[in-house]
Length: 181
Image 1 (cartoon, rainbow, N blue to C red):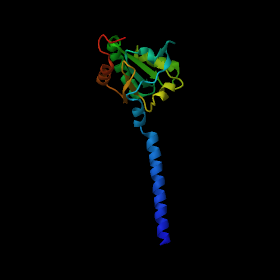
Image 2: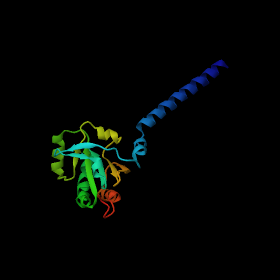
Image 3: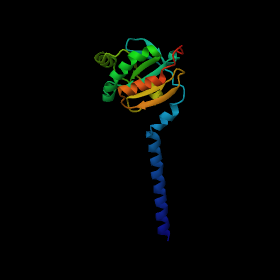
Image 4: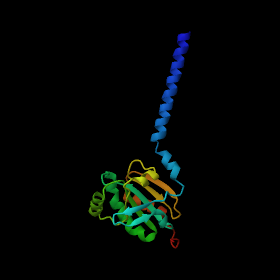
């Protein structure tokens, strides 16, 4: 009888450990945690330098929709979507939408070479210390945040986008005509 009780207790303890480990792994690797924390809230403000040496501060873009894209030159999906973002930027830049493409920790020369190769004209920001990356809880790239004219994050898109996707997302954050401050 005692042996049976010990076996049951050991089994329950083992089950408890397995459940605890499973919960820890789930909570640490769940991508929903970052999405829930930021969607519907004010976008974390930041100030980063561009390739040209100018500074861009997110809060100074109040009144515009912001298409905030995190990317890197070594990322194949990023390479595919950059021309789509450029195409849409050419239309939406005059319609109240700003693109901010944040490179995640690469050397300036590497980023500049990529920008030249793809003829990108929207602001490329350098996040050398990955502080903005961490503030937005970015995991895999590419990831894009849609920020409305009031500075509220309305969506987070993870993964590669098509031309149609980019157009649709920029339409979502485009301020109404005559509302741009």
